[in-house]
Length: 213
Image 1 (cartoon, rainbow, N blue to C red):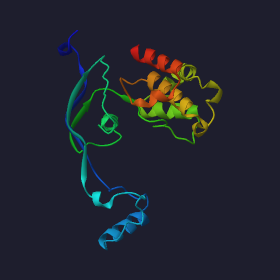
Image 2: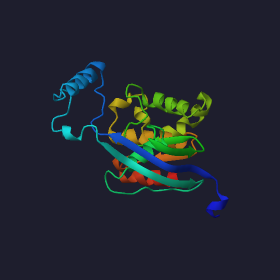
Image 3: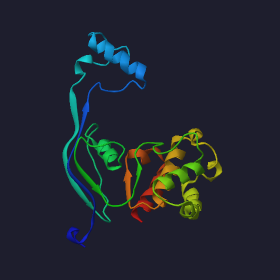
Image 4: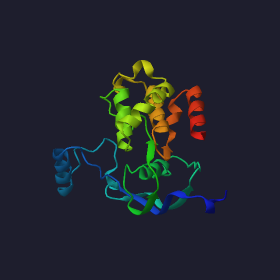
């Protein structure tokens, strides 16, 4: 079947993402006001990380500058490039974690994403509770999640720890559970970053097989 007969599920047109160097909130209103007052007086920002070049403050950086792509139903697309090329930024935009500076993204279907270890999980909640939370985010009912729960737990290989808060999980366990959730809950589009590199070889092969299915 050629692409003209397939339905496009991801369409990206003229996508741009711009960042301002140094424009990072301090996390509290007090810190932000301290930074603003220091800039007004021409003084060093007391909240700046040691070693940061203040001369770069306010300059802009284009993480993505005019990206166009189309992904059709049933396709697997790999994004490759050197460090800093904007791969993870593009995936975050597709996952709606951050918003584009310009351009348009059209997505047809529900998106499950695994971008970093622990993304989308609440550390204080157990593995089981996080499964239900992720399912709810994807718009699934409790009954639908109940039906898939045994498969998710079995695939994750975390059965003995499923009722343990995930903050006690190793990075490998985090990835196993996160992939099991992403692969079994009803989403039409799966967005994966390099996170599977954390898992062992046997589990990586298991994940690749599931993605092929």
